[in-house]
Amino acid sequence: MDPDSVGSVERVPHGSDDGVELDFSANCNPMVPEGARAVFADSFDASRSYPRDDSPEFRRVAADYVGGSPGDVVPTAGGLAAIRLALGVTVSPGDSILVPAPSFGEYAREVRLQGGVPEFVAHDAVRDADPADHAMVVVCTPNNPTGELPSPEALEGLHERCLGAGTPLLADEAFLDFTDRPSLAGREGVVVARSLTKMFGLPGLRAGFAVATGRLGERLRRAVPAWALGTPAARVGAYCMRQSGFVEATRERVREERRYLRAGLEEYFDVAPSDAPFLLCDVGEDPSDLLAALRKRGIALRDATTFRGLDTHVRVAVRTRDDHDRLLSALDECTK
Image 1 (cartoon, rainbow, N blue to C red):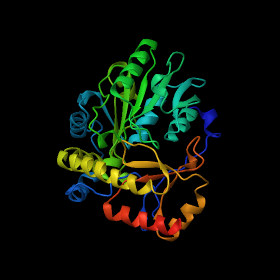
Image 2 (cartoon, rainbow, N blue to C red; image 1 turned 120 degrees about the vertical axis):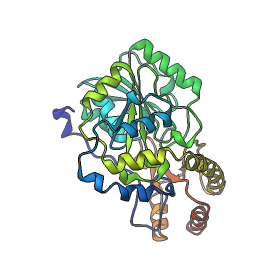
Image 3 (tube, one colour; image 1 turned 90 degrees about the vertical axis):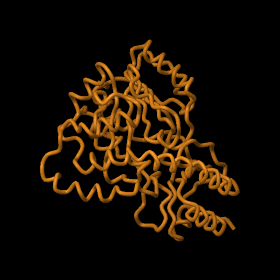
Image 4 (spheres, one colour; image 1 turned 30 degrees about the horizontal axis):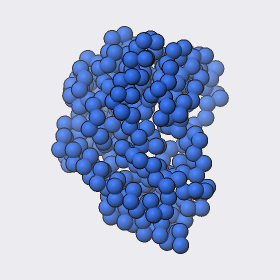
């Protein structure tokens, strides 16, 4: 991290609102794998000792989960910690980094904290960008907040160009496990950042990991803080990633509920296509009045105007059928 840059870098707004009955602002699964609570409770006694620094079980399960090698997995306290680690071993002050926009605001913030310069590229054009003369390229699959997932061919082309230019590719796959698309884990020159927050509905657990091979992987392993993943996070995370039935059931539910929610929201807004557990909606005007009206009814949406280039948008998480019906009913009241 560049000390001279820290003072000029602002915090980034996020979703999540504990002050309402129904929160559509955070893209976390409203369900948790059965048995996860018991695993968490059982980890208390072991938490009185330092965790295994190499987290061997977590690494083995994570490698199976993404289709990589345990030796290439670097456990971190959430996906954002993996992103910071990847940028920290790659970016020097003054370096240019290709960053999609609109997309997760922490990419640009983390680049700036390293003293780097984010060069923004349209989220649907970054996969076609020229990586030459850049220290890293960032891609979000599926992209947050727009929800689209680049085709395998587009990602393969970007990867090949990055290899040719000698530019590392950082693939944020925080939402990829809601799809059936394979991970980029194990590819030469790629750092994959994964989060267990979204699929398993445990944002406070702070469990995630990075995956990288070769010299990139070695740099990550050298730079990661000691005891980066606590015992409860390691044990619950490993347990959750083994629950393949839960993952598949969640994917199917999200696909079905996303179709249902999209059809309902299109009665009021322009809704972007999505492969993710959320939908981006253009409400056609400043959404602050709408957000306030819904909040009075105990419902929070994500104010997407905080994303670069979005002035009239909200983002809506995919939840359950009852939750969706309640939201659509509230929208009907608000827009009369």
